[in-house]
Amino acid sequence: MRNLRGWMLTGVWLVLSACGSDPAGTAGDQDVGPDDVQTSDWKPSGKDATILDAGDATDAASQDATDTVDVADVAKSDVIADIGGGLPSEVTAISPAVALFDVQGIHEVKLTVAAADWAAYLKGAALPDGTKVYDWYQADVQVDGVMYNAAGIKGFGNGSQLDNPAKPNVRIKFDQFVTSGFGPSGEQAFRLKASGQDPTFVREPLAGAMVRAVGGNGPRFSWAHVTVNGMDLGPYELQESVDKRFFAHSFNNKNGDKFEPIIGCMGMDCPDSGGCAALKPAYVGSPGDPQAIVDAAQAITNATDDQLPAVLDQYFYTDELLADYAVDALLSNLDGWASAGQNFTIYGDETTKKFHLIPTGVDLTFGNFNSAWYDLATPWGPPNSWCATRTDPMYQRIWNNKTLKPKLLAKFRTLQCGMFKDTTLLPLIESYQVALKPFVYSDPKGIYTPKQIDAYYVALEQYVTKRQQTLLDLLGPCN
Image (tube, rainbow, N blue to C red; front, side):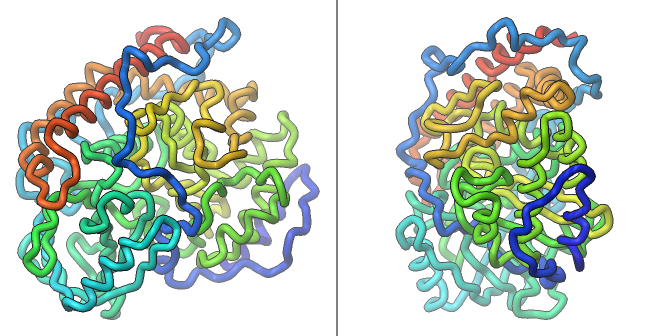
């Protein structure tokens, strides 16, 4: 995005604050940069999570009469009757994978790394929260019997590594050390996630599929059995990398700017102190000029309620934004765009000159962490956020906006009557629990017993059942 700031300053009604004057940088190597590593990611340990008791969990504030919406008033949208997003409806077993993101199969991934390099890799992952150090190391990577030499490996994540640094997350980049290196299915990179905060191994794949099912963006998933130098590390989630290839197949454009926050508590709303300019340090290190983020936040903040729909459309793909908000609120996501201002990527499309939102790291969902339970009218803010003062005013303004609220409710409706429907989602969850058992129960580096894993699955299903009632109270029954 060679002149991103230029098109960000073309607001129709708004006089924007002059917060900095550097021209936007040209997108260089979009595959390089922060990768879910925040310098201020202070989430508590996943192992200490309190499992939701469906009998005790209630909405923080039940929808009152003024919030009840006649389904006829909700903007019409196609209800997704099937799972969408690439997930099958049910599986009987996880078998050897065919395609890279074959969600009915499991890949065999074998890494060969110099012993000293792997020791340094583990040492970096084991550092205390907020101080982890991730460097690139060279490795030979074999995927389903095919060898890819001299790839790069690098850790990522913070809270997801707290409990079990002996089973580290691994980002694989095939062209890190070899020019134009490609891996399976022509991918230049993918991530192996140890699922340290999700013993079920399904919350993030399910959440990502829901985002895609209602018009948003999200990386695709499958699973992998991983060994390093012959040592068995057990099952992993295999996640699509949010890089140039992702942008190309998702947006038909790969030459824009990629932004990822390197400081927690930074979404798109202006912070309580320091104004919108305080956002800029959070995105330093991204290939694009973070001044573009400041300009967009300033414009959105300055917009009146009547102006807000048009201003959001000017800077964002509003439909994608509402898709992410709806899924995050419905699943009580504690660690995403709205709640913690992290675990997302913003892509500035050079062709359309608008931002795409791509959620990542959506594993603290479905209420399985600290018994999270969001009221859909006011989902974020203390105590439902790691950020002491963060309330995400954008969501609140959308909820109270006569033009935007029906569009948001339409997203909830699509989920209610589609993928999130209990007769659809519960059999899917149960089938994956059975199919993944042979891998998850026997995880040689696992920290959860089979009994604990089963309890997390029960809690996940309880959450779905109770959340369906929330949607019924808000929107009425499906047709």
